[in-house]
Image 1 (cartoon, rainbow, N blue to C red):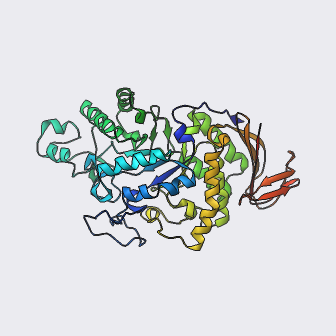
Image 2: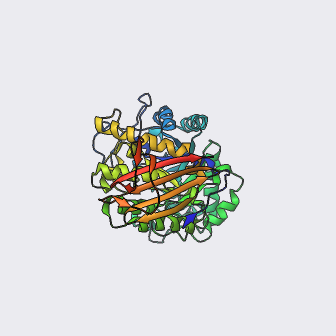
Image 3: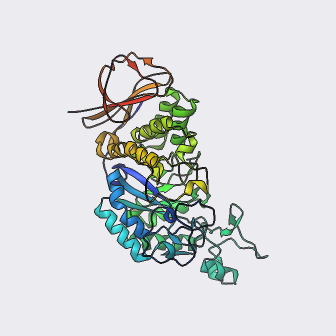
Length: 442
């Protein structure tokens, strides 16, 4: 069972390292940017309503840190003008939220990111908007042209996203909405962005994405579209990728819960890759702004976190690191997973970073990781050997998430590198709760 290597192309910026997810209000703040509202003290507990003032200039100042981690692309949660701290209730699709900066700040960020070989991906929220959007207010006031953008009813009610009154649904079957979204994509393309993640596209009208793709085929920033997706992927025929939460769930099953053995884990990872097609640009999530933190999912077990994080980097696809996951930050689901990024690291966070950084760098430094397929060599209970290979560059991975050593048929004797990327010699058994790699090249 295996996945074949992929061909290199215009999406190599995605394959070439880690994708780093940033919730703009919570990552980094340049204090020289004045805030237009009261801010909570950085580092205090997040709520669904408070603001901390993270901004684009703060992100730009941290690009060197992200490059050093092996990041090749950044996926931003919404940055457009909106009243909430999450900004999925868009007020203006053509203006950066003033609290996080200006349109010029985004231009500067994209230019600096490009100089670091980092692509910028924006979050496109086109299934719904916010109730303060001027076009929606005009529609409510009787503007016939604006009414074509929404689902309005004679009694003054309107279709919403998930029954949420502050998020009116856009009428994606209407040609006027298609025109509008095309204008949005063309507008931000000029800023130097590299792609888009689309929010709840499984609720778009039939044919909307196909038409949008055809209209924007001339834009380099419209060549990598990620669809928000959970367990169902069949709708995403007009996207390069889906948010692969399946892999993260299976990883936790394998390294921590033990509800999956090696066979369950590797068979599913390979089959999902085969199902999608170009698995190499498929973003794999172990956590995000919509889930508990990975450290919380593994119930605070540093042993499981270490095994899982390394295996996350070694699996086919693009590993997503939600800002702070590289520090083993904990947090339950929204709002606790949306904590601010520390301005200074405590001893535990520093130790986690010293562990995670080499694994993130390896992902970006190895052609076998970027473009190589995956080939199953042998498995037994919770022990597994697989290879990633591309044009003579090969990485062999040996992992055992179980609680006892395993004897395999494959000869594993010789020098390996362990979880801490230290040299170690193995004889004939795979040690319990261990992960080892070995690189070879022609």
